[in-house]
Amino acid sequence: MEKIAKLRHKFLEFAGQSGYAPTIKHSGSGKRAVVVIIILLVLIAAASALYIYSRTYAKAFRLGVPMTPQAFDSILSRTIPHLYGMGAAAVVLAVVSLSFQTITQSRVLTPSMIGFDSVFVGTQTVLVFFFGAQHFLFADPFINYLITAGIMVVVSMLMFGAILRNHRNNIVFLLMFGLVLSGIVGSGTSYLQIIMNESDFFQVAAATAVNVNNMNVGIINLALPIMAAVVALTLWRHRRYNVMTLGPQQAKGLGVAYEKELKWNLILIAVGMSVATAMIGSLTFLGLLAVNAAREVLKTYKHLPLFIGSALMAALTLILGQSVMELLQGAIPVTAIINLVGCSYIFFLILKENRI
Image (cartoon, rainbow, N blue to C red):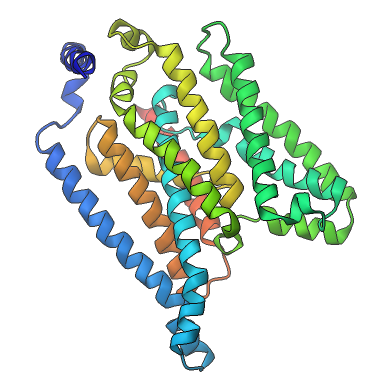
């Protein structure tokens, strides 16, 4: 703790000398963070209540049937796992997105650019193509989840090891390699989906569709501990991220083993993205939106309130959006709207950075 305190003092001293500090509003940032977090927690509770109402009493009213206590308990037993799954996946995606933006020094990048989404779809397609939709490797939710998440982690580790070996910190090349990998895997996946039979194709489409109602809720008890561990380890390292915000050279000058921290961070990102994507599907821009919204609202460089704020905003966005869709019986999945807004926001950020 003494070493961390010294690093923090050096960081603040360096920030003041380098002109970084004037762009940060220190006064009242702690109170602002507490108020924002309390408001977000209240809104999440309200959104969760709305989600339960939309799947119980609102649906019964539309169908013109009474909502008995037995029916309510039955629906609630299926609704709560979806709430847990949405909240956990949103929190993990926001946390790893913030840490990824810190190490890449960019607000317009997300971990999905490394190729997690294409590997997820490719794994599901290969399982169905070679074994069939009825085979236990695909049909069993636990085995499917372990295979999918395991392959995604292994591919990520091999990619990180090949590109970042020998203390090379080439994040740009890693992103380029991820984009190439996405293209190759996507092309192979499309070819397999074209030549497979129609019923298998629809099974793959259903399994990879980004829809909260299609979530693999059967493996939540397995996924939650892993995601909780990723979030806890990332939050525990929040002071290191404060220093890494300054960049590799400055962080090294302040005593941070940057290459080591970078690799540990990429491992946490790989595990977190893998387990979340394997459970709920691809939510490419949810973390991007939540992280940038938290930066604008909290006005701080400190990663602990940013992690918490980003996680709560991501959970609120996903739960509230799904609640509204359930209530209005919208035909468009909320994840499609999130990705559309996120893509538009990326264009806005790119144009903004270009003007600066």
